[in-house]
Image 1 (cartoon, chains in turn cyan, blue):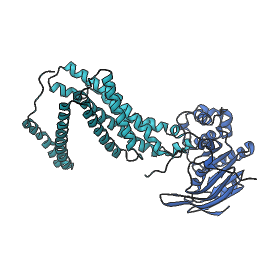
Image 2 (cartoon, chains in turn blue, yellow):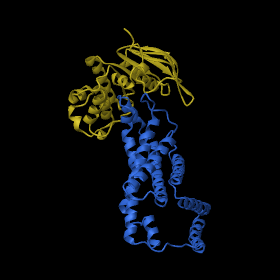
Image 3 (cartoon, chains in turn blue, cyan):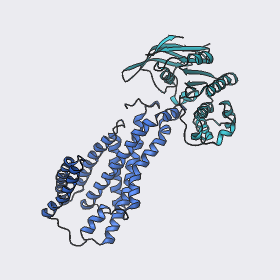
Image 4 (cartoon, chains in turn blue, cyan):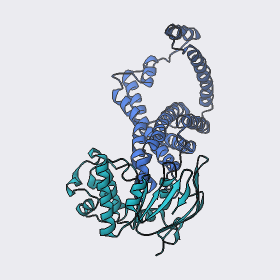
Length: 257
Length: 213
């Protein structure tokens, strides 16, 4: 890598001009988002500055235990956030927690074992953050779909149970389509990457002055890593969460609308 | 003759609303029905018989044994419920019949089963989702028959059908009763159908209480 990029507070403040455009559009077109834009800007500043300080401290300490602690906190908040999007799935928190922890843990262990990254905080923290974030989105989308489809497919599921099928046989088509919706968005964006949009890592590296070939290779490493972790998260969350719709006697539970 | 099903002080509620209120009855072999207006808990009662649901209080027995002492999947192979609306799996008619037969560990004679259900054997290779509601309802019946059950539970099997299709399904059920000696419990809101199709009838009123049996 060549010279690292410096961003002054002045440059940061200058970009607020573009935020001002967003606010003007919102007020002018009565979209009623100006308050949310303000909150978003302030929160992004505070949250990213705070995490920047935390990451800085972890890099200076250079100990893996702090990396694990930070990623555990991300997994916990990721599971809480995803649960809010999966309200129609009873008891979604534990499946989400297990899904995110496994996706994060398995992915980081694999990239280290395969010698893609060295086991150092400066690699593991950003990769772990990306993995957990994407795993959260995919698990949340998958469980959101599961909650809707278990309701709309309830007559078919009960008809299958009535034939003496197990809960897992009866739920299989719904679990499969939920898993698919959890994975599809990353698969699609991976397909169009470089044509329709430049992914963040590549943009960051190019801005920081890296060689484009290196930027592309690192971006591919991350995209392909994310495909695996997103699949793990969607698979574990759906295959644990569907069980909460059934009793041990293979009966469909009554669901609140 | 010993009853097929015995209900003892069965109470069921959902979201704080009483669906079945202290129902007791002995359902005999043969052609039985559960009749009553919508909201009288008929379909819920039917679901207690093959343990798709459990009562809050009371006991349901099948051939003298509490249904909770059966393995639920085995009970549902022996006591086959056909729901009110067709809900088939994706694929052909024969895929559906095979799926049901495989669950019960049977090797199906597709042509014979379709004939029993009142469908021409040529339906076997047709896409199940492209059939009429009446034809789909017969595929639902064929799936149940493929499991070679001891008793059929039929939830308003003709409510979605026109008069002609209804008569034809009723004739099919009468023939099954005669030719295979199959007992059934039929749920209906139609008092005339209850009269035509059963030798024994449990009548329920709104709020899930027994009117007479």
